[in-house]
Length: 489
Image 1 (tube, one colour):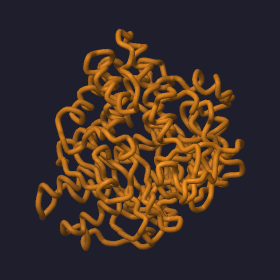
Image 2 (cartoon, rainbow, N blue to C red):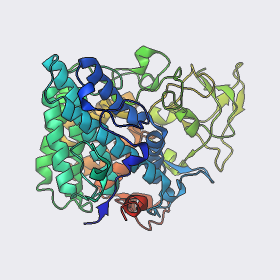
Image 3 (spheres, rainbow, N blue to C red):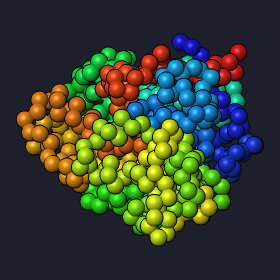
Image 4 (cartoon, helix red, strand yellow):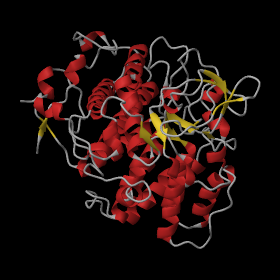
Protein backbone atom coordinates (compact mmCIF):
# COMPACT_ATOMS: atom_id res chain seq x y z
CA UNK A 1 0.00 0.00 0.00
CA UNK A 2 1.08 3.57 -0.59
CA UNK A 3 2.38 5.27 2.54
CA UNK A 4 0.76 8.58 3.42
CA UNK A 5 2.03 11.34 5.65
CA UNK A 6 -0.91 13.02 7.33
CA UNK A 7 0.02 16.69 7.39
CA UNK A 8 -1.48 17.59 10.69
CA UNK A 9 1.85 18.99 11.79
CA UNK A 10 1.03 22.14 9.80
CA UNK A 11 -1.08 23.16 12.78
CA UNK A 12 1.36 21.49 15.20
CA UNK A 13 -1.79 19.83 16.44
CA UNK A 14 -1.64 17.89 19.66
CA UNK A 15 -4.17 15.97 21.61
CA UNK A 16 -4.66 18.29 24.52
CA UNK A 17 -4.38 21.88 23.29
CA UNK A 18 -7.48 24.02 22.94
CA UNK A 19 -5.99 26.89 20.95
CA UNK A 20 -7.44 27.15 17.40
CA UNK A 21 -3.92 26.73 15.99
CA UNK A 22 -1.94 25.22 18.87
CA UNK A 23 1.81 25.67 18.90
CA UNK A 24 2.99 23.80 22.00
CA UNK A 25 2.60 20.43 23.62
CA UNK A 26 0.78 20.34 26.95
CA UNK A 27 0.85 17.68 29.61
CA UNK A 28 -2.21 15.44 29.79
CA UNK A 29 -1.86 15.53 33.54
CA UNK A 30 -3.03 19.13 33.70
CA UNK A 31 -6.05 18.80 31.45
CA UNK A 32 -9.20 16.69 31.03
CA UNK A 33 -9.53 16.39 34.78
CA UNK A 34 -12.94 18.06 35.00
CA UNK A 35 -16.17 17.97 33.03
CA UNK A 36 -15.61 21.59 32.03
CA UNK A 37 -12.20 20.82 30.56
CA UNK A 38 -13.49 17.75 28.72
CA UNK A 39 -16.39 19.75 27.33
CA UNK A 40 -13.92 22.34 26.03
CA UNK A 41 -12.05 19.54 24.26
CA UNK A 42 -15.28 18.32 22.66
CA UNK A 43 -16.08 21.83 21.44
CA UNK A 44 -12.52 22.03 20.11
CA UNK A 45 -13.25 18.90 18.07
CA UNK A 46 -16.36 20.45 16.50
CA UNK A 47 -14.42 23.63 15.81
CA UNK A 48 -12.43 21.93 13.05
CA UNK A 49 -15.53 21.99 10.86
CA UNK A 50 -15.80 25.78 11.14
CA UNK A 51 -12.35 26.40 9.61
CA UNK A 52 -12.58 27.83 6.09
CA UNK A 53 -10.28 25.10 4.80
CA UNK A 54 -13.03 22.65 5.80
CA UNK A 55 -16.20 24.64 5.16
CA UNK A 56 -15.51 25.81 1.65
CA UNK A 57 -14.30 22.50 0.16
CA UNK A 58 -17.19 20.76 1.94
CA UNK A 59 -19.62 22.45 -0.51
CA UNK A 60 -17.24 23.40 -3.33
CA UNK A 61 -16.53 19.79 -4.20
CA UNK A 62 -19.98 18.15 -4.44
CA UNK A 63 -21.85 21.27 -5.57
CA UNK A 64 -19.72 21.77 -8.67
CA UNK A 65 -19.08 18.06 -9.35
CA UNK A 66 -22.80 17.32 -9.67
CA UNK A 67 -25.27 18.64 -12.25
CA UNK A 68 -26.53 21.35 -9.87
CA UNK A 69 -24.01 24.08 -10.67
CA UNK A 70 -20.82 24.94 -12.49
CA UNK A 71 -18.14 27.20 -10.96
CA UNK A 72 -17.60 30.84 -11.83
CA UNK A 73 -14.79 31.27 -14.36
CA UNK A 74 -11.50 32.05 -12.69
CA UNK A 75 -12.54 30.85 -9.24
CA UNK A 76 -9.54 29.59 -7.30
CA UNK A 77 -8.50 26.38 -5.54
CA UNK A 78 -8.81 24.38 -8.80
CA UNK A 79 -12.60 24.26 -8.37
CA UNK A 80 -13.00 24.06 -12.16
CA UNK A 81 -11.55 20.54 -12.12
CA UNK A 82 -14.69 19.15 -10.48
CA UNK A 83 -16.93 20.53 -13.20
CA UNK A 84 -15.07 18.62 -15.91
CA UNK A 85 -14.14 15.58 -13.78
CA UNK A 86 -10.47 15.98 -14.54
CA UNK A 87 -9.16 16.18 -11.00
CA UNK A 88 -5.45 15.92 -10.24
CA UNK A 89 -3.61 15.19 -7.02
CA UNK A 90 -2.62 18.84 -6.54
CA UNK A 91 -6.19 20.07 -6.26
CA UNK A 92 -6.26 22.64 -3.46
CA UNK A 93 -9.84 21.91 -2.38
CA UNK A 94 -8.91 18.29 -1.83
CA UNK A 95 -5.65 19.21 -0.08
CA UNK A 96 -7.47 21.47 2.38
CA UNK A 97 -10.32 19.07 3.07
CA UNK A 98 -8.01 16.07 3.51
CA UNK A 99 -5.79 17.93 5.97
CA UNK A 100 -8.63 19.38 8.03
CA UNK A 101 -10.39 16.03 8.19
CA UNK A 102 -7.35 14.44 9.80
CA UNK A 103 -7.02 17.33 12.20
CA UNK A 104 -10.65 16.66 13.10
CA UNK A 105 -9.91 12.96 13.51
CA UNK A 106 -7.03 13.65 15.86
CA UNK A 107 -9.15 15.91 18.03
CA UNK A 108 -11.98 13.36 18.08
CA UNK A 109 -9.57 10.56 19.01
CA UNK A 110 -8.23 12.64 21.88
CA UNK A 111 -11.75 13.12 23.24
CA UNK A 112 -12.47 9.39 22.94
CA UNK A 113 -9.29 8.40 24.78
CA UNK A 114 -9.62 10.99 27.53
CA UNK A 115 -13.24 10.10 28.35
CA UNK A 116 -12.88 6.33 28.70
CA UNK A 117 -12.42 6.71 32.44
CA UNK A 118 -13.70 9.86 34.15
CA UNK A 119 -13.84 11.07 37.74
CA UNK A 120 -16.86 13.29 37.10
CA UNK A 121 -20.41 12.29 36.20
CA UNK A 122 -20.26 9.02 34.22
CA UNK A 123 -23.27 9.86 32.03
CA UNK A 124 -21.60 13.10 31.02
CA UNK A 125 -18.39 11.26 30.26
CA UNK A 126 -20.37 8.81 28.09
CA UNK A 127 -21.94 11.72 26.24
CA UNK A 128 -18.56 13.27 25.50
CA UNK A 129 -17.16 9.93 24.32
CA UNK A 130 -20.20 9.37 22.12
CA UNK A 131 -19.68 12.76 20.51
CA UNK A 132 -16.04 11.90 19.85
CA UNK A 133 -17.06 8.61 18.22
CA UNK A 134 -19.65 10.40 16.10
CA UNK A 135 -17.09 12.92 14.88
CA UNK A 136 -14.54 10.18 14.15
CA UNK A 137 -17.21 8.40 12.11
CA UNK A 138 -18.20 11.60 10.30
CA UNK A 139 -14.64 12.34 9.16
CA UNK A 140 -13.90 8.75 8.13
CA UNK A 141 -17.18 8.57 6.18
CA UNK A 142 -16.48 11.80 4.32
CA UNK A 143 -12.93 10.68 3.51
CA UNK A 144 -13.83 7.18 2.31
CA UNK A 145 -16.59 8.51 0.04
CA UNK A 146 -14.29 11.13 -1.45
CA UNK A 147 -11.03 9.17 -1.76
CA UNK A 148 -11.65 5.46 -1.15
CA UNK A 149 -8.66 3.91 0.63
CA UNK A 150 -7.22 6.37 3.14
CA UNK A 151 -5.35 6.04 6.44
CA UNK A 152 -7.63 4.86 9.24
CA UNK A 153 -6.98 6.83 12.41
CA UNK A 154 -8.34 5.42 15.67
CA UNK A 155 -5.81 6.81 18.13
CA UNK A 156 -4.62 10.30 18.94
CA UNK A 157 -1.24 11.56 17.78
CA UNK A 158 0.89 12.47 20.79
CA UNK A 159 4.23 12.73 19.02
CA UNK A 160 5.16 14.02 15.57
CA UNK A 161 6.83 10.72 14.64
CA UNK A 162 3.45 8.95 14.84
CA UNK A 163 2.16 10.60 11.65
CA UNK A 164 4.90 9.20 9.39
CA UNK A 165 4.30 6.16 7.24
CA UNK A 166 0.56 5.81 7.71
CA UNK A 167 -0.76 3.16 5.32
CA UNK A 168 -4.06 3.31 3.50
CA UNK A 169 -6.72 1.06 4.95
CA UNK A 170 -9.14 -0.90 2.78
CA UNK A 171 -12.56 0.60 2.13
CA UNK A 172 -14.10 -2.39 3.88
CA UNK A 173 -12.10 -1.88 7.07
CA UNK A 174 -12.94 1.82 7.14
CA UNK A 175 -16.67 1.07 6.87
CA UNK A 176 -16.40 -1.60 9.55
CA UNK A 177 -14.79 0.92 11.90
CA UNK A 178 -17.44 3.55 11.13
CA UNK A 179 -20.26 1.09 11.85
CA UNK A 180 -18.67 -0.06 15.11
CA UNK A 181 -18.04 3.51 16.25
CA UNK A 182 -21.57 4.65 15.46
CA UNK A 183 -23.21 1.70 17.19
CA UNK A 184 -21.17 2.46 20.29
CA UNK A 185 -22.03 6.17 20.01
CA UNK A 186 -25.75 5.30 19.81
CA UNK A 187 -25.44 3.36 23.06
CA UNK A 188 -23.59 6.19 24.80
CA UNK A 189 -25.45 9.28 23.60
CA UNK A 190 -28.73 10.66 24.92
CA UNK A 191 -31.36 12.29 22.72
CA UNK A 192 -30.59 15.91 23.42
CA UNK A 193 -31.05 18.75 20.92
CA UNK A 194 -28.15 21.18 21.16
CA UNK A 195 -27.63 23.03 17.91
CA UNK A 196 -24.35 22.07 16.28
CA UNK A 197 -23.68 19.06 18.54
CA UNK A 198 -24.39 15.41 17.83
CA UNK A 199 -26.72 13.24 19.91
CA UNK A 200 -28.14 9.71 19.64
CA UNK A 201 -30.42 10.69 16.73
CA UNK A 202 -27.52 12.22 14.81
CA UNK A 203 -25.56 8.97 15.23
CA UNK A 204 -28.56 6.93 14.05
CA UNK A 205 -29.06 9.25 11.09
CA UNK A 206 -25.42 8.99 10.05
CA UNK A 207 -25.45 5.21 10.43
CA UNK A 208 -28.48 4.98 8.16
CA UNK A 209 -26.52 6.90 5.51
CA UNK A 210 -23.59 4.51 5.91
CA UNK A 211 -25.84 1.48 5.46
CA UNK A 212 -27.72 2.91 2.47
CA UNK A 213 -24.40 3.75 0.81
CA UNK A 214 -23.21 0.17 1.19
CA UNK A 215 -26.55 -1.31 0.08
CA UNK A 216 -27.05 0.81 -3.01
CA UNK A 217 -23.40 0.59 -4.06
CA UNK A 218 -23.56 -3.22 -3.89
CA UNK A 219 -26.93 -3.34 -5.65
CA UNK A 220 -25.88 -1.12 -8.56
CA UNK A 221 -22.30 -2.35 -8.96
CA UNK A 222 -20.72 0.94 -7.96
CA UNK A 223 -16.91 0.59 -8.22
CA UNK A 224 -14.96 -0.86 -5.25
CA UNK A 225 -17.95 -1.96 -3.20
CA UNK A 226 -17.83 -5.60 -4.28
CA UNK A 227 -16.78 -6.54 -0.73
CA UNK A 228 -20.27 -5.74 0.63
CA UNK A 229 -21.78 -9.10 1.49
CA UNK A 230 -25.43 -8.49 0.55
CA UNK A 231 -27.35 -5.46 -0.66
CA UNK A 232 -30.55 -6.72 0.99
CA UNK A 233 -28.83 -7.07 4.36
CA UNK A 234 -27.74 -3.45 4.34
CA UNK A 235 -31.02 -2.16 2.92
CA UNK A 236 -32.68 -3.83 5.92
CA UNK A 237 -30.17 -2.29 8.32
CA UNK A 238 -30.65 1.13 6.71
CA UNK A 239 -34.41 0.77 7.09
CA UNK A 240 -34.14 -0.27 10.74
CA UNK A 241 -31.75 2.54 11.64
CA UNK A 242 -33.63 5.23 9.72
CA UNK A 243 -36.83 3.99 11.36
CA UNK A 244 -35.33 4.81 14.76
CA UNK A 245 -35.07 8.42 13.57
CA UNK A 246 -38.46 8.51 11.87
CA UNK A 247 -40.64 6.48 14.23
CA UNK A 248 -39.00 6.15 17.64
CA UNK A 249 -38.29 9.71 18.75
CA UNK A 250 -40.08 13.06 18.64
CA UNK A 251 -37.35 15.63 19.28
CA UNK A 252 -36.61 15.94 15.55
CA UNK A 253 -39.57 15.95 13.20
CA UNK A 254 -40.79 16.62 9.69
CA UNK A 255 -41.28 20.35 9.13
CA UNK A 256 -44.52 20.95 7.20
CA UNK A 257 -43.36 24.47 6.29
CA UNK A 258 -40.95 24.18 3.36
CA UNK A 259 -39.59 27.71 3.66
CA UNK A 260 -39.15 27.46 7.42
CA UNK A 261 -36.56 24.70 6.99
CA UNK A 262 -34.10 27.28 5.69
CA UNK A 263 -35.02 30.16 8.01
CA UNK A 264 -32.07 31.36 10.10
CA UNK A 265 -33.53 34.73 11.07
CA UNK A 266 -34.12 33.75 14.71
CA UNK A 267 -32.44 31.30 17.10
CA UNK A 268 -35.63 29.20 17.17
CA UNK A 269 -35.77 28.90 13.40
CA UNK A 270 -32.01 28.34 13.16
CA UNK A 271 -32.40 25.11 15.12
CA UNK A 272 -35.70 24.04 13.57
CA UNK A 273 -37.36 20.61 13.80
CA UNK A 274 -35.60 19.18 10.72
CA UNK A 275 -32.05 19.98 11.76
CA UNK A 276 -30.43 16.89 13.24
CA UNK A 277 -26.81 18.01 12.82
CA UNK A 278 -25.31 21.15 11.33
CA UNK A 279 -22.30 23.43 11.56
CA UNK A 280 -23.40 26.37 13.73
CA UNK A 281 -22.48 29.76 12.31
CA UNK A 282 -23.81 33.05 13.57
CA UNK A 283 -23.80 36.49 12.00
CA UNK A 284 -22.45 37.96 15.23
CA UNK A 285 -19.27 35.85 15.06
CA UNK A 286 -15.92 37.61 15.14
CA UNK A 287 -14.21 35.79 12.24
CA UNK A 288 -15.39 34.02 9.11
CA UNK A 289 -16.14 30.46 10.11
CA UNK A 290 -17.88 31.70 13.23
CA UNK A 291 -20.05 33.71 10.82
CA UNK A 292 -20.85 32.61 7.28
CA UNK A 293 -20.59 34.10 3.79
CA UNK A 294 -22.19 31.02 2.24
CA UNK A 295 -25.16 32.93 0.80
CA UNK A 296 -22.79 35.02 -1.32
CA UNK A 297 -21.47 31.88 -3.00
CA UNK A 298 -24.91 31.24 -4.52
CA UNK A 299 -26.06 34.82 -5.23
CA UNK A 300 -24.77 36.00 -8.66
CA UNK A 301 -21.98 38.56 -8.72
CA UNK A 302 -24.14 41.05 -10.68
CA UNK A 303 -27.02 40.95 -8.16
CA UNK A 304 -27.72 44.30 -6.43
CA UNK A 305 -26.00 44.80 -3.09
CA UNK A 306 -29.25 45.63 -1.30
CA UNK A 307 -32.47 44.09 -2.56
CA UNK A 308 -35.42 41.88 -1.70
CA UNK A 309 -36.72 38.48 -2.74
CA UNK A 310 -40.21 38.39 -4.27
CA UNK A 311 -41.71 37.64 -0.83
CA UNK A 312 -40.03 40.71 0.69
CA UNK A 313 -37.07 38.94 2.34
CA UNK A 314 -34.03 41.23 2.43
CA UNK A 315 -30.79 40.06 0.87
CA UNK A 316 -27.44 41.34 -0.40
CA UNK A 317 -25.00 41.01 -3.28
CA UNK A 318 -23.01 37.91 -4.04
CA UNK A 319 -19.79 36.35 -5.29
CA UNK A 320 -21.53 34.03 -7.78
CA UNK A 321 -19.14 31.12 -7.16
CA UNK A 322 -21.82 28.47 -7.89
CA UNK A 323 -23.67 29.11 -11.15
CA UNK A 324 -26.88 27.12 -11.41
CA UNK A 325 -27.19 24.69 -14.33
CA UNK A 326 -30.35 25.53 -16.27
CA UNK A 327 -30.98 21.90 -17.36
CA UNK A 328 -31.10 20.96 -13.69
CA UNK A 329 -33.74 23.60 -12.98
CA UNK A 330 -35.70 22.38 -16.01
CA UNK A 331 -35.79 18.87 -14.56
CA UNK A 332 -38.13 19.96 -11.74
CA UNK A 333 -41.87 19.44 -12.12
CA UNK A 334 -43.54 22.74 -13.07
CA UNK A 335 -45.63 22.56 -9.87
CA UNK A 336 -42.69 21.84 -7.58
CA UNK A 337 -42.46 24.45 -4.82
CA UNK A 338 -38.79 23.56 -4.37
CA UNK A 339 -38.20 25.11 -7.81
CA UNK A 340 -40.83 27.82 -7.71
CA UNK A 341 -40.17 29.12 -4.19
CA UNK A 342 -36.66 27.95 -3.31
CA UNK A 343 -35.00 29.18 -6.50
CA UNK A 344 -34.89 32.94 -7.08
CA UNK A 345 -35.53 34.35 -10.57
CA UNK A 346 -35.82 38.04 -9.70
CA UNK A 347 -34.87 40.60 -7.06
CA UNK A 348 -36.83 43.74 -6.13
CA UNK A 349 -36.24 47.12 -4.54
CA UNK A 350 -38.06 48.23 -1.39
CA UNK A 351 -41.04 49.37 -3.46
CA UNK A 352 -41.42 46.04 -5.22
CA UNK A 353 -39.88 47.07 -8.53
CA UNK A 354 -37.74 44.47 -10.27
CA UNK A 355 -34.03 45.26 -9.93
CA UNK A 356 -32.47 42.04 -11.20
CA UNK A 357 -33.33 39.09 -13.40
CA UNK A 358 -30.96 36.45 -14.82
CA UNK A 359 -29.10 37.73 -17.86
CA UNK A 360 -27.37 34.56 -18.99
CA UNK A 361 -23.81 33.33 -18.70
CA UNK A 362 -22.90 33.40 -15.01
CA UNK A 363 -26.04 35.37 -14.11
CA UNK A 364 -28.56 32.60 -13.46
CA UNK A 365 -31.38 31.86 -10.96
CA UNK A 366 -30.01 30.90 -7.57
CA UNK A 367 -30.94 28.94 -4.46
CA UNK A 368 -32.62 30.78 -1.59
CA UNK A 369 -31.72 28.04 0.89
CA UNK A 370 -28.82 30.17 2.10
CA UNK A 371 -30.44 33.56 2.70
CA UNK A 372 -30.25 35.39 6.02
CA UNK A 373 -32.54 38.47 6.07
CA UNK A 374 -30.82 39.67 9.25
CA UNK A 375 -27.36 39.77 7.64
CA UNK A 376 -24.79 42.19 9.01
CA UNK A 377 -22.66 43.36 6.09
CA UNK A 378 -21.19 40.15 4.66
CA UNK A 379 -21.92 38.24 7.87
CA UNK A 380 -24.79 35.72 7.90
CA UNK A 381 -26.03 32.82 10.00
CA UNK A 382 -26.47 30.53 6.99
CA UNK A 383 -24.76 27.15 7.25
CA UNK A 384 -24.46 23.77 5.51
CA UNK A 385 -27.24 21.29 6.29
CA UNK A 386 -25.33 18.14 7.23
CA UNK A 387 -28.12 15.85 8.48
CA UNK A 388 -31.77 16.77 8.35
CA UNK A 389 -34.95 14.82 8.89
CA UNK A 390 -36.15 14.75 5.27
CA UNK A 391 -32.81 13.30 4.14
CA UNK A 392 -33.31 10.38 6.55
CA UNK A 393 -36.99 10.07 5.60
CA UNK A 394 -35.93 9.51 1.99
CA UNK A 395 -33.25 7.04 3.09
CA UNK A 396 -36.01 5.16 4.91
CA UNK A 397 -38.15 5.18 1.75
CA UNK A 398 -35.28 3.97 -0.41
CA UNK A 399 -34.37 1.20 2.01
CA UNK A 400 -38.01 0.08 2.42
CA UNK A 401 -38.64 -0.06 -1.31
CA UNK A 402 -42.21 0.08 -2.71
CA UNK A 403 -43.92 -0.91 0.53
CA UNK A 404 -46.72 1.08 2.13
CA UNK A 405 -44.15 2.58 4.50
CA UNK A 406 -41.82 3.45 1.64
CA UNK A 407 -44.55 5.19 -0.34
CA UNK A 408 -45.81 7.05 2.74
CA UNK A 409 -42.33 8.38 3.46
CA UNK A 410 -41.61 9.71 -0.02
CA UNK A 411 -45.13 11.10 -0.41
CA UNK A 412 -44.75 13.24 2.71
CA UNK A 413 -41.82 14.94 1.02
CA UNK A 414 -43.56 15.24 -2.33
CA UNK A 415 -46.82 16.55 -0.91
CA UNK A 416 -45.02 19.29 1.03
CA UNK A 417 -43.45 20.31 -2.29
CA UNK A 418 -46.90 20.59 -3.87
CA UNK A 419 -46.68 17.35 -5.85
CA UNK A 420 -49.06 14.43 -6.11
CA UNK A 421 -48.22 11.00 -4.69
CA UNK A 422 -45.60 8.92 -6.42
CA UNK A 423 -47.00 6.54 -9.04
CA UNK A 424 -48.08 3.34 -7.25
CA UNK A 425 -47.09 -0.17 -8.30
CA UNK A 426 -43.47 0.53 -9.16
CA UNK A 427 -40.90 -2.27 -9.14
CA UNK A 428 -38.22 -2.21 -6.46
CA UNK A 429 -35.59 -0.93 -8.91
CA UNK A 430 -37.86 1.74 -10.41
CA UNK A 431 -39.03 2.87 -6.96
CA UNK A 432 -35.47 3.30 -5.73
CA UNK A 433 -34.56 5.21 -8.89
CA UNK A 434 -37.47 7.56 -8.16
CA UNK A 435 -36.21 8.07 -4.60
CA UNK A 436 -32.76 9.04 -5.88
CA UNK A 437 -34.44 11.48 -8.26
CA UNK A 438 -36.58 12.85 -5.41
CA UNK A 439 -33.44 13.37 -3.35
CA UNK A 440 -31.96 15.47 -6.16
CA UNK A 441 -34.90 17.89 -5.85
CA UNK A 442 -35.36 17.83 -2.08
CA UNK A 443 -31.67 18.11 -1.19
CA UNK A 444 -30.60 20.35 -4.08
CA UNK A 445 -27.57 22.54 -3.31
CA UNK A 446 -27.06 20.86 0.09
CA UNK A 447 -23.97 18.82 -0.84
CA UNK A 448 -25.51 15.34 -1.22
CA UNK A 449 -25.97 14.80 -4.95
CA UNK A 450 -22.42 13.76 -5.88
CA UNK A 451 -22.42 11.04 -3.23
CA UNK A 452 -25.85 9.79 -4.34
CA UNK A 453 -24.65 9.55 -7.95
CA UNK A 454 -21.52 7.71 -6.89
CA UNK A 455 -23.22 5.18 -4.62
CA UNK A 456 -25.84 4.36 -7.26
CA UNK A 457 -23.33 4.10 -10.12
CA UNK A 458 -25.00 6.94 -12.04
CA UNK A 459 -22.14 9.37 -12.63
CA UNK A 460 -21.79 8.56 -16.32
CA UNK A 461 -25.46 8.04 -17.13
CA UNK A 462 -26.55 11.34 -15.57
CA UNK A 463 -23.64 13.67 -16.18
CA UNK A 464 -22.64 12.69 -19.71
CA UNK A 465 -26.21 12.97 -21.02
CA UNK A 466 -27.98 16.31 -21.14
CA UNK A 467 -25.13 17.90 -19.15
CA UNK A 468 -22.54 16.88 -21.72
CA UNK A 469 -19.68 16.29 -19.29
CA UNK A 470 -16.60 14.39 -20.43
CA UNK A 471 -15.47 12.38 -17.43
CA UNK A 472 -11.71 12.04 -17.70
CA UNK A 473 -10.99 10.54 -14.28
CA UNK A 474 -12.05 10.51 -10.62
CA UNK A 475 -15.70 9.73 -11.33
CA UNK A 476 -16.05 7.65 -8.19
CA UNK A 477 -12.99 8.53 -6.08
CA UNK A 478 -10.67 11.52 -6.12
CA UNK A 479 -6.88 11.16 -5.88
CA UNK A 480 -5.29 11.57 -2.46
CA UNK A 481 -3.42 14.90 -2.50
CA UNK A 482 0.16 14.46 -3.69
CA UNK A 483 1.55 16.62 -0.91
CA UNK A 484 0.56 13.94 1.63
CA UNK A 485 2.91 11.49 -0.08
CA UNK A 486 5.64 13.99 -0.94
CA UNK A 487 5.99 15.08 2.67
CA UNK A 488 6.71 11.48 3.59
CA UNK A 489 9.83 11.29 1.41
